[in-house]
Length: 206
Ligand code: GLN
Image (cartoon, rainbow, N blue to C red; front, side, top):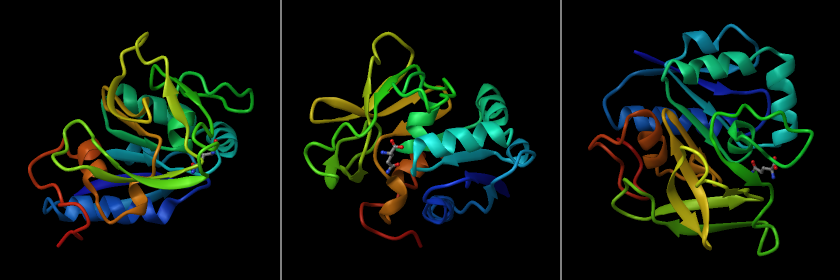
């Protein structure tokens, strides 16, 4: 059985746990989800999710609790990490905000709240590399991704001409919230290397 960790210092934790369970169930895999608030748990995890929330708070707590170096080691060992919204901001190399101490796991610069001028939140059908059908992506005060060309990150999806999903080694970062829809294909892409058991859009895993 797999052990999944969801960084739970702040943010939408339960939704990620449920999405991981759906993605695993769709593949007949057993998974135990652990919530990470302290150091010492990440080393037991096969895969990790770092949720949305408030990136300055998540960054501060990751460092004060000693979890940040464990997340770096997890990725250095080639184990998957899905970083969403605020999680993406924390995983980036530059969030353009002194209050965020980035983990530098993705060679990208992000612009916080980049889509805020349009609407605070919206849902969009997103073409994602590796997925056959558009993914219903929920954006909530979402960051945009910049400066991808200078690093090793590969763009998986763009919206309004700006990258909103990237992959670099074992790390997938999304500006949107894949845990907020029943469609667990992004979790499948990040954690199960997009095998052929993906759940069709809108359909709950059996
Ligand atoms: N705007 C938030 C931040 O900059 C992220 C929003 C979210 O995770 N939904 O931290």
